[in-house]
Image 1 (tube, rainbow, N blue to C red):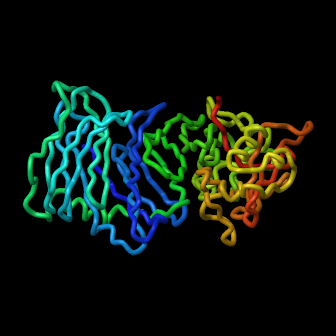
Image 2 (image 1 turned 45 degrees about the vertical axis):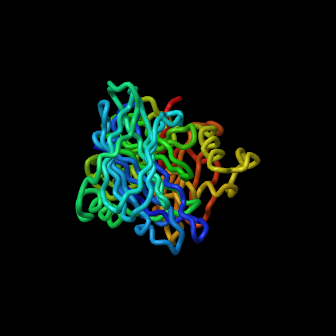
Length: 422
């Protein structure tokens, strides 16, 4: 049964107007097609809600002085999907004319009905002539609500909407109580220009995208296997056309207390893998890799990103083309701020994480031993060599909104983010 979750949205609009509703639906593809749940977070204020994957997320807008609840209505359709005939229930908290319309997937009007209704819960039967995906819209003098319905089997000769009558005689039952609960429990403030971070879950898979929503849409979450040789599965994020790990690689096949090792956990000086994995630094920041070990540690079907892979990422996040191949700090586009996590960085040097990359300040392992600067800095290896013993790297720093491109000795220990093979 499909549910509707209302998000109260603070939009930039005229003082007397109400913005049009925005409906977000979620579908899955790839390793999993069923979306278990989605956590939506407004990156502007860090408020979030978690909703089942089969719901429609309705972003509703209002101006600063209008009480949204006073002009609200709620709709519900059951069952969904349905065979031939389904029932639409409409809750109104004010009387007036209501138009119910049905459109097919390309926007053609199939049928409609208008009625003057009192404030209460009202039922309509909707019958569809042919199986498919359709959109129901309910419009009153002050609101428009819509939802997607799926007809799996049709037996009628025509499509129609039929008013049945009042569904309940009290406003304290059914959709009325659901409406009150939705407005008190599922609220996410939103204003124009905010980015929403969507984290979708399906079984062991997690995928992330960020989006600045300006219109109704179906968000397709591609669930991709990213499991290392230790059996750990990682969250992934789609940024433009690339798919990256959204966590630091934590594959740890060996560990050595001496500096001759190739894998390190920040602050751990022992030689027992399970002890190292039990530390907070491992759980938060993963593993620090020497340059050579970083090239052989990514999961199957993933690889250590090249310098060109990083340049493509930086370009998609707004870096000027003239800065792509420059060495040192490159500030254009504030790419570092977009990559950095929203917390954990020294002296409040956090990022916006508008990319969903969620870069964490994991520090580094020094050439001659010792770990340094956790909380202040992170380095990422690339697979592109520079000479016989150096490779290109990326650097993010707590006090800089940009991203550094330079080379480093392959004996240093840096973090790794893998990228999906094309």
